[in-house]
Length: 336
Image 1 (cartoon, rainbow, N blue to C red):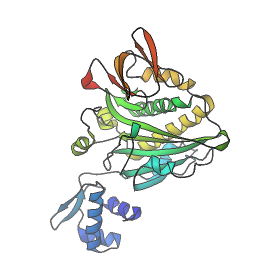
Image 2 (tube, rainbow, N blue to C red):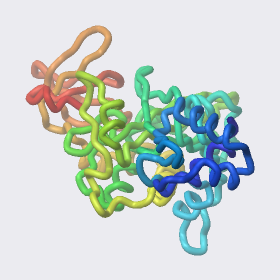
Image 3 (tube, one colour):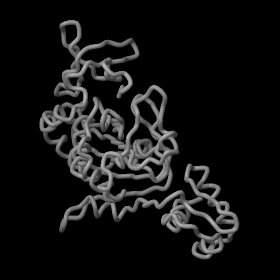
Image 4 (cartoon, rainbow, N blue to C red):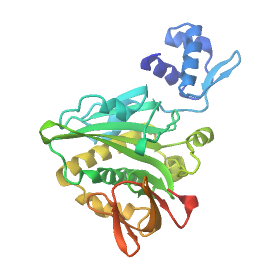
């Protein structure tokens, strides 16, 4: 099953209407048996295609497929198109791992990959990130710096600011951040960032930055991504209502914001993002619990240092944490 064949079939089904098998076979120039096999393979990847006996196939509802040209158009500006190529894959194990396994791109020429389906998407600390078909956005950017930027450990915070502000400007006005890399809405997780670093010979550095974002989860998809004891999930459909933009428009907006952030961070470090991060910090001033492999502590969150470390006041002193899981102590049912 090739990406092109899958996308061609899904493009025909994307309107959510019923399409007869012979019609699909004719338009794809394949046999009806081939259509039947394609439908079965797509179902195995998690695409919900319903069969109506003797009438045909349909998706559960309309779906806008990702399109590289549309994303680039949305990421650019009038008279100044987005300068980088965009790859859109139907399915991959992980957009981050796909780019991390490839050679680092030249400085000034980032590589960008979107996927409709991730079979083994990753979150922080080895956790999985599952994005049901058509319900969200998953993409990664490989970016190279001529030398290691100052305060590189704070890069996820800086890019969180870029993502949150892009979503707010699109209509998700209550979007906030949770240290170190979660995008939240009313203490529920909209998405998260994952950064992988690779130091190069001669002092250069490259990073692969991945973003996973819930856009419009069906009831079935919501139950599939919910993890007992973990952060409750939210999607942009809840946060934005009728203002929810198309997936391609949203993808372009987020891509442009993240590339702008990566470029500025390389020049100026975390300093230009620090004040805004404090404003968007969903836990600042709250009583929290920080959990690490060695145990947990409780205290009052005081925001982040210039290197991205979380500051927590506990037992009359201020401790700094560069890693760990943080949850609200006063309201464990809202743990984020």
